[in-house]
Image (cartoon, rainbow, N blue to C red; front, side, top):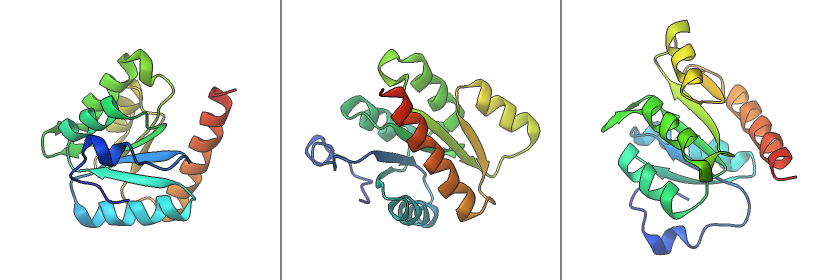
Length: 143
């Protein structure tokens, strides 16, 4: 479900299965992530900026969020920190996906509240495994 131009009505028509919010400004990477997410049996909604991610998160609960570190309007780490500080989103499973993957960058992402910090050089299998872990974690949180 490719949705860069999210509206209140399009968000209201999301599937009942867990839906992943992809915050990525590169359209090719966005499309690749959507295919992988759908292969994992999940739905995907994509936005290209932190501003649009905030709007999407305010409108709909997304249990899984994949966020790029470098966005056109800011740092994905700041978005992770904002999501973690909001009580309503405490069950969100946050995955940071970035080319900035030094140990210092990974530590900063995890400190900001990311559950996983992955390199964009990671394999598709690693992302699929992290999505499976996210689903298990979310299922436990809902019990």
